[in-house]
Length: 442
Image 1 (cartoon, one colour):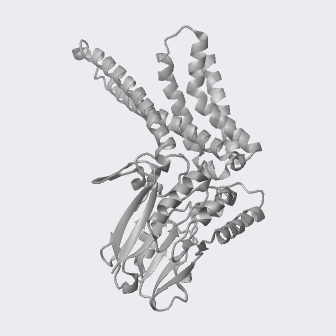
Image 2 (tube, one colour):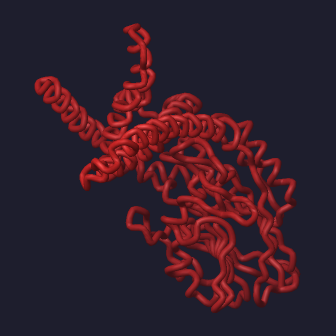
Image 3 (cartoon, one colour):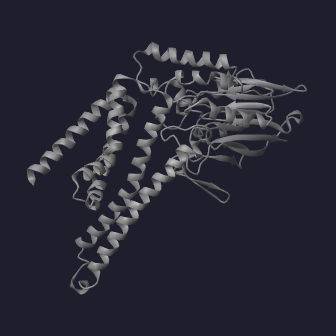
């Protein structure tokens, strides 16, 4: 028994150490998250100790098949990471990459929920035994109640995992491209009459590396054009890892047009910081390729710069900054002062800034900026977003995570777009992909 235990412990230790070096070689940017992956593996082992006790069969082939099915996501994760070392996943067929990653994510999320329920139950049961709640006075009734309750919770937790799998597969195959138009009317102080009713369509976080084909993007573009926008703005994160993800969508994105054009800014993913580049020059070339791509599709990149829009001799300014985040993990390259230089006497200024934390820390303190448009959060791609109820895990990370916010002290507004694409989990549950139609009024 002891030999078996020590052997299993040794194998687990070797897997964890090997995984660390493999992650360092393939995904160096994710090394800070490696403890989480270790915790995920330990959770997997803990849940398996419960699941295997439910496999009532003397058929060794069936038992092995069920065990393989349980551990398949882990084996797939290891296999894809190893393959990635020799053949970068950015070069895989998009649909293969997207659905493999989605499969791994779905099954691990589905395992995590029941594992947490069971762990909490075991901790409570252990506490009761530790403090001797199961004493002789309750010996006739309590143990059977505890056993019955324990079995019920085990069954409930496993059923919860099955429900999670079903829901998250629906999120991948259906809801991820169920585009929603959000209409917002925003009163702007001192807005020139020529811009009363001006229509801005905001899209954000396309993450083109997570799209299986161009047809779905064309559908979104058709919806955007039906909004009859005066201006289209894209608030960052065109790609996941590198600019090469965008080229297959070139012809689709060239179709996007509005009376005053399409303006864009950079998000944290656009810098190529999540790739293990062969050299510094390769990373710089990736950025030059992004600038070339924007030129070729006709979108104007505002890189700490601005665009003046004129109607009937009246003007408003669109200021675009590079990524700026209060979170140390993300770049702080945005510079409002530099972007505003040379604007002159324009009564209304609208800021495009990818990360909404920029508004809280910097932008809302600037008296000249009446409205800020951001993205970045995706609304976590999971939550409840219906009239009267708005909840997502994103709210525990970002103070402003989706929709319209205002600063009553100085009448400044922030709108956070829920994103049009996805990353990590290639799906959405409750928080659907968003196209925002913003009408500014005087």
